Image (cartoon, rainbow, N blue to C red; front, side, top):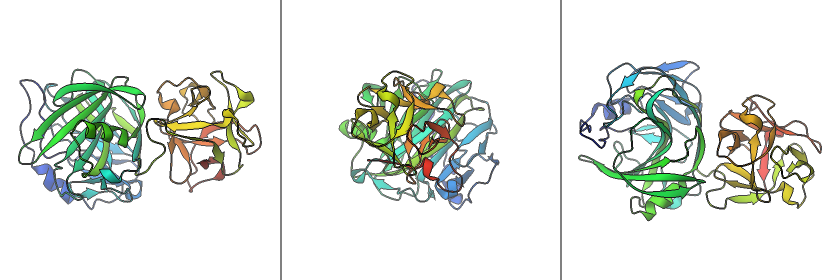
Length: 399
């Protein structure tokens, strides 16, 4: 919720004050330098570019007056200071967040944003985050405007995608329905807000909360267009993820965040094929044609069998014959954790992000899909991504 005016909420204590200072301060931060290790932001509107300028992290405390600080990492942040306690039937205290794109003139680079909705390929974002005590939501805040480069408040749509939440707060507006998107049920809320500039606010609240998710944005924009809230002629200007705390704050953290203007397979049926290792030229294969949970995944000479077929959909890799997912054993985040076949369950252990450099990362762990060898029978695992670029046992192609 990164805006110049706090969002009113249902209830007698709905907030209507206008915070005009945010626009001025945000503009002054447009040239902020990239973050270094252990950077701490404490100013209400402090921001910092990270990942070589690809993303921007912002403290964005706009609905409370107590000190709030966040520690910044290369692709995330953690709230360390600022236990909020504002009314849960009004606006939240803040929206500490990380984003790709432009917000109030403060832009990241190399993201292909702004992007007209009609020109969408498959814009995709993945996030892994940690939660804490309190009352809050953990949500994407995706902004759309009728113009490609607005200097201030967007005038099209604010789309919020609540991956998780705690306590009694609800989205702005009124619940208007429920929809099945990307393997989950979502409650849909709608309201129109703003003063001199107004915009549609559409919120999707996941009924099955998760702390790790890959979002194919087009699945949600198609639904919003179908409801008449979004126009395909508008421009997506930023893709943000963070937390709206009403009560609490410290401990909330984005562990990893990524955005790709044309990511891996979209919603619905996804894309199917083999997954081939650059080093070995061999395919991801279910050992001994196994179909049971726990079947190891290995490298083997590529063939035409169903045991080497994988469908990329909703951030998962599914073997169509078994209907089961590529999974990190035990949900581990440790180097050497084995990759296996398991019943699809929507957890972070089964989320996979295909990256432009050919690596495939598990957002929950931040580690790469890795082959422990190059010969037939070499097992798949997760391992720290090579810091100097890529190494061939961690580079993959779907064919």
